Structures are given as structure tokens and as C-alpha cells.
Length: 346
Image (cartoon, rainbow, N blue to C red; front, side, top):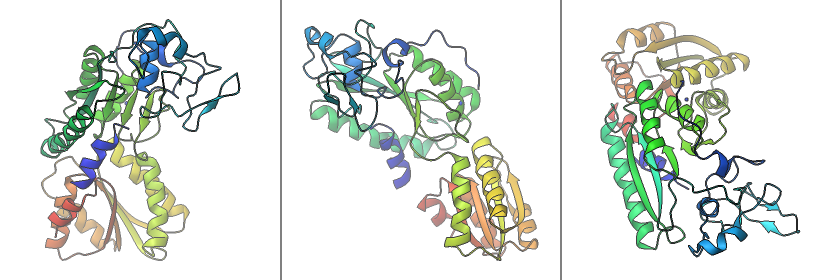
């Protein structure tokens, strides 16, 4: 639960999709197109509103050309020798940071009074109880920020958008975001839905913070809050060898048959073999599968000593069935390995 709540909070600091011409392109995409996409100050400048004062008359001075814009986290040098600061929402001053061209027009989701953010998640999917509870925590953050005056005097408006934990649901959620007046979107969880949603949002030119996809699809305006599954699998192999003393032991992996989970296992097994470990067995299970005994029995018979799990709620059943079999390998994993999942399997 701590990880889930933190995940949604962190989100605020892929499938084909037919979306109309990108709405944010003029405001955010220039020489340093991705650098300033999260700055409320930049958006206000592009919208013709001074970020600090809310005064439209100051906006022209705040807008900057690509040569003067500062899109990087460390700041960028201006043509006149001064330095533009970080482009984060908390760091932009007077609309002076960023590469939004003057006269680019109003930016969707930012007014002199509000900033609108869509939260795209599985509010009715298999993780609905967890996701909705985490959203309540996010609303606490919203209330706290708004009570303190908002961001540059602008109140946070949250839009709850359901991707239903399905690939098609991700696309539908994206289309909802493109029409609900949001400045940017956060996609804090999902497996296939997060990929299709973010792919569509990026194509629409909407800045997005998201829970990592299976691999890095080179999106232009989407930024992950954690490693991709492919990266995670590679790193986990080193941990198994060194941290769990896996050299000379038989390693196995079990994963849910969806893209993100499989990507982690694919790189995990490849890297494990490259590092000289023996991969004794790899098993796939289906989402929400009721019993995992047959897969675990094959792994036990193969002599697996270290088991890597790439799953979410299925982890509970995997741990439960392993215990009922009297099989107790060393277990590690990639994905939502929350404390409550482990505890549920004890």
C-alpha cells in the first residue's frame, strides 16, 4: 500500500490511436521540445499569462525562444549570459523558463485560476480497490496544495479517467483526456493499458508522467517514474547473482502473460545466462489465474532454487500455492512486490 500511494503521489512533481492534430505541440515542442513540458510557468507564458503574477501584460517578456529557453533540469544559458532555472512546476519564475514561443496561443488546462491534470488508472480494473484508495491520498495532496494557494496562484483540478486495465481502455482513456481540458496526464499504473494510453497521449502532444512500459518506446513528451520492465529484468539478474548468491544455483522465473511482465523475464533470463547462471525453468501464467500449482510443480521438479516472480496480484496465489506444496525457494521479483502481497502469501 505504501508503494501504491507513493506511486500516485510521485506521478505529479503505448497501440495505435487516432487523435486529432496535437494540441500542445506549438507550446512545448521546439528545439528542446521535451524539456519544459511539465512547467506550469511555461504554459502560462504560452497562454499569455505571467506565471508568477497572473498578469497577461507580463507574458510577452516571459516567453522565450529556443535559444533562450531552459528545458534541462540543471538550467540553460541564455543568449545574454544569464541562466534559466529548472523547468519544474515548482521552479519556473515569471514564465521566463521554457521554449514556448510568444503568441503560441492558449495552452489547454491552464488558466489564470487553475491547472487541470488527468489521472489515468484502472479505477474499475482488478486493482480497483488499491487504485481508488491511492487516489484518495492524491486528493489529500490536492487539498493541501490548494489550501496553500495552489501553484502560482492556480488551484489544482484533478480529472479521474479510467483505463480499465485493458489495451482498448487505455486508448479510450487517452481520447477522454484529449477532450477534457487537461494540461497534462499521469498514468501511475497498468500493464497493457498504460502502454496504449501513453502511446496515444504522446501522439496527441500531451505531456505525461507514467508507470514504465515494457520497454522504452522513445516517446517525446512522456516520462517514466520508474525503470522499464526490460531494464528492471536486466538489473535483477545482477542482484540475483551477487545479492542472492545465485552463482552455481538454479534460477527460475514465472510471469503473467502480458507485455510488461514478459519483458522483465526476457531480459532477466538473458542476462542471467550471460552472467553464467543456470536458468532451469520459465513458466507463464494468465492474468487472474486461480491456481499456480502445475507451473510451480514443474519448477520444483527442475530444481529451481531462486524464483523470480514478474506479476502483480497473482503473486499472492503463487506464494500461497508454493507454501501449500511445501516448496520454499528464495523468492525475488519485479513489478508490484508490495509488502501486503508478500504478507498475504505467508
